[in-house]
Picture 1 (cartoon, helix red, strand yellow):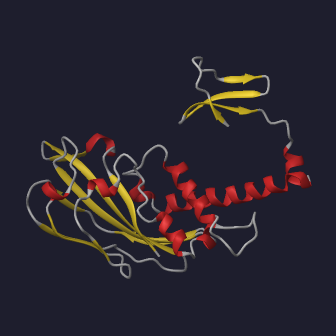
Picture 2: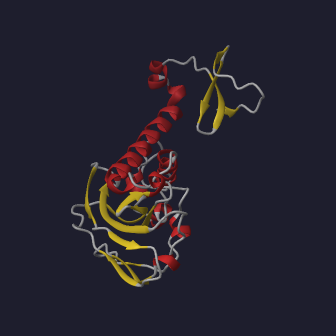
Picture 3: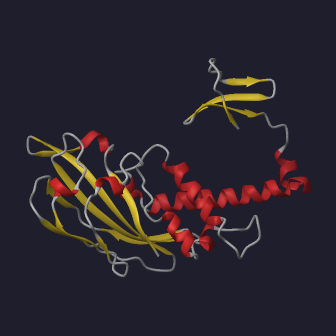
Length: 249
């Protein structure tokens, strides 16, 4: 695949080239003349089959994580979160030193500290990374899934988008088993605060804890609202909301 940087923005097929518009602009790729049957059986395509198998595992792992965190992710995500997350999963999969090429898994890659570190501080909304939004120290209790922020001052400890009058903080404590596809856990009640100089000790406690085997994730969601006639409305449809993975176990 290559990028089309020409003046003419072509879409369609020309001889053996296919032009199309993607999220990264106008792209071009060669037209494949190899049948699916040959790819699946021909020894010459052994590497291709291995790549396809691992691509499938990475895609499933990314989808599984998104499903497990869907309740919070619906409030804070960008239009490239699926591809960005899959890219992370592919990198984690390559850390699997146990299984042969073509059979490496994200689950095995996440048994390594390096693999876990690749998902820590992952931002679901690149337009609002947590490290740029939340300007306060927080503490994460990895045993209970609690998140605490002592002496939190919204007017001082947040990078507030224009028009925001209130902020809501929520956390999630979730376990995901990438081998079985099962996940469990809970989300904390929201801590809703006026964005002023008042000081509050914030404690976010999930309503349930994960059960069963799997990797454990602790997430924090920051949502902005605007008060109009005593009703809080999501600010700009959540474009400035931030969701990040704070811990991976």
